[in-house]
Image 1: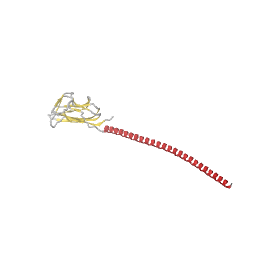
Image 2: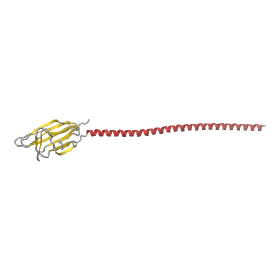
Image 3: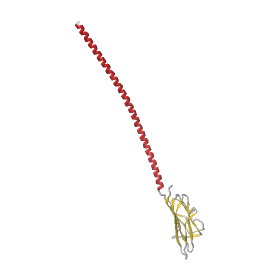
Image 4: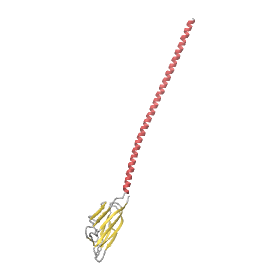
Length: 224
């Protein structure tokens, strides 16, 4: 009887231990499942963060590329503007000097055609017509040098588009051959014409030491 009781007690204890261990295993499994769920949640959170970071990095790269493009475009614009302003500020080379190749008689009101070109920077002077056409608007300097035969006068003037801008007369008596000059500055618009005109029928005398010349140059260009 006593042995039977002891056996029952042993079985009962064994059953209790088994149930305890089973409950413990169940709790551990539940903890593991919870841990696994938390890990999965963390993985999702990490993936979300990683995706967000990747998008941010991509956006930053795109913004950096766009910024560089904007900077390049701005630099190109500034360079073009600087070049344009520099070109405007540079004084173009405009100047001419022409002379008569031989003694000529020019009638009243006619242009004096200086047929031999010494220099013609800017290609403004025409040796066929004797007319200078301004390639740029600006302030110009003009001068004319004439020589007369003895006892004969030379009456001449510089005209701008038909308007007299300076004039002079050269004369010496007693058979003296002499020369003189007249000069002026004038504001001339682009494409306006300037020339020397005879105010009276005059002989423009030429020899190796007496040159009749017409010259001019751009002093200051007007930038609009």
